[in-house]
Amino acid sequence: MADLDAHERLLDEDWGEKWDQLPEAPNLVYRRPKAAQITLRVPAGTLGALRRVARSKSLPYHALARSWIVDGLRAGQLPTAADQIEDAETVRSAEQLNLKVEPELLDQLKRFSDRARRSYHQLARQWVRSSLRRELSGPASLPRLSLRELMLLLLDGDGADHDAVRGRTRLQKLLFVIQQELDQGSSTFYAYNYGPFDEKVIDSAEALRANGFLTGDPGDAALASPPTFDQMMAVVSRRSGPRGGREPEVFQLSAAGRQRARRLRQSSPEYERLHARVQALRQEWDKGDLLERVYERFPEMTQKSLIKAEVASRRHHRGA
Image (cartoon, rainbow, N blue to C red; front, side):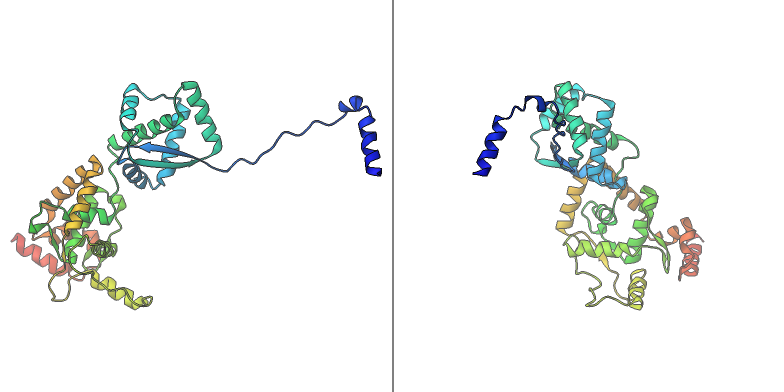
């Protein structure tokens, strides 16, 4: 009963004069998500090319694509008529590029697209594609090959038996000189028992073989427990040179490996050009005097060699 009386007194009271005395209501605040997402439909092959360019710059490919959108917004540059025609022809392609962006960036993109009378998805896609095309057409845009990719291109010749590389030492030396010619900055070879050596070469070969891309059985079996330091050094020493009188190990692409190499080459014109360059370098270097030529050309890689005198003697007799 008391509550009812209090309610009636509140209704009877004139609140008009007190209305203006009330404090201002605070602005409505809501928590915006920390990230938004843009989904772009891009032509087939775009994601692979974007990843390669990003890898050559040591950047995540999502971050690189976002930076191109930011650059497009800052420049306020609208796509050309050619870009629009190309975009209309490829918008139905199957690949999707999902980018997480800051909500503020998405707001800016939507405001710009509204003023430009264009879809913001279309603008973002065209900025990404035009930047990617510019990167791929520049002289410094050649993709940085991993050792696995380099090995695939090296072994993918004309299909004859001589495509195979016989011996770990020869494989090491061929990959070394090709890396020196193509991208010296990415090389991790160092001077060891038989000249330039990188333990990742055999790791990469075994990974390709385990995936069915190379013929034959996998090489070193995995240890049941973590290896000791002495075991690791024994493996490194064994991998760095000849196989102690046994037949040299053969590195050759399987049918699946050739198919994988073809897909790699067809993924972009840059990879096709790199394949041609790798094959030309192999033709230049893959001869009987490979080891002697490597020792002569790269003396800094022979400082720890166990066969330096022997190689020098063979080179001397060959030149005599």
